[in-house]
Length: 608
Image 1 (tube, helix red, strand yellow):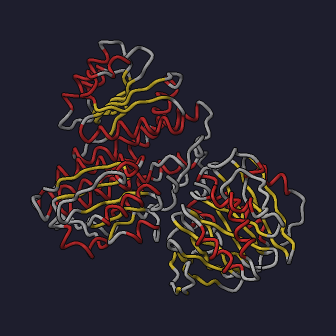
Image 2 (cartoon, one colour):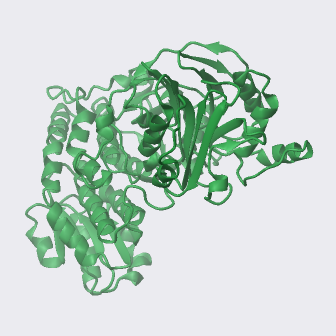
Image 3 (cartoon, helix red, strand yellow):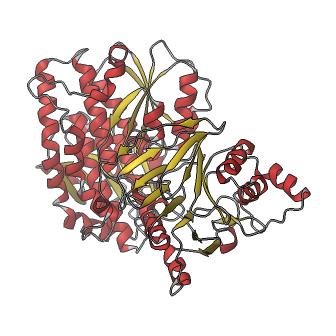
């Protein structure tokens, strides 16, 4: 949930580290700090608040070192103040440590160190790391970090420097991501590729219980048991410019408008129009078993969970497979019993979501096969699953996911279509599906063309303190996702419901002061949704309909209409979610919210 950036090389470290921190802002944080080494001297500065406060603090200082570590913290242990900010330091002021994750046994370690005379100055679990590295340091920084790793329970991505080990940075991970960057003028490590992609696109991923020692000339990777590891570099497929605003006021709006290209990237090279069969090379290692499977469990969190819920309906429509969708945070604690040849599909933008990782590990112990749908190449889920499909969507910076959701829906459709063509779908049905998929980018562009109208709708209802989102079948998860987006970025209370549940309680909330967003395209559920809308209107509730183009009936019934082009029933969610995203964005903008970095939220949830 926090950010780490490290550098050692021939360049000046301070501007590289500060820029890296800025590229990690989207992950969520409440304090920041930096430690830069120049010979046997370390410049160490921390502040509560935003990175700009750290910049003000060091403005005018001559920080000349070429090696250092920096961090953005999201508070878990201790208040978000300067004392608890990272880097944390040992008592002698020689060891400086940054850390993501939670050290679950930090209290017994702290008690032991207190008995040994160590004085603590913060409330963080991270400070024990600095004291342990100091205790174990005998001239070898890597060995001191290795011995520290062996003491720890819990999750960590950590980086350490020592005043008496100039130009060295030691990093280690267990359950929290760390990536090494190999540059021409030095080497990097970061919790996110975006922090260093301006300087290098050559990366090496660390696995759990591995560490690395970085120097200006190279790096070595080893296990916690001191076994040296050789690992090839990978090339990152996106550039630093992909993580720029490019004229948009916020990343969320930029990423909403990138969605036509996101769909193109998801289907590029994967469509065979003549055969009506997608090509998904990433699942070929398990294809023979997958096409015979009759039980799939999708596990995910947040927006990815709602994508999985849409996916369940799509699989039911196109295949003969029984599909369950589970919140990863609950799934991992269930007593699991899988039928033979069950496949787990883990969905995660980052590929590092802690609960989803724990869920697939537990499922693997119980004999399930593992697939992943992730956006980040080389991420933990991509490496711990047997096969999978990459989104190829480029970086998503806004904390509230938009383009990755649409990419996930597209890929789930491709997978269901591929399996369906081997089970029950005819050639004609397959060709029809691929034709409809190929039209989606232009259709999303048409929806985006209504941005001014959607902005006006948002302005009309933005002062309503409560919103309701309704949908049925394919559109029920879109109602849930629409409500989530509004909550995330505008802080307006919103509820998403299956429309059939209205009479079972939620209809009590309907009033002239609460707008309802009804997701009502002309699909198989259309007439049922019309009945639900009439129930709301009879109680004087205002209704914003997301409806199919040319639907004159709906225009006579509701207060506002946002239109989407016609498509197949199971593809409508890719179109109907776009107005929900824009409504949330514009409500947040009218309320002057911090849209790309909503309060209390982080982009990648890497702790439970």
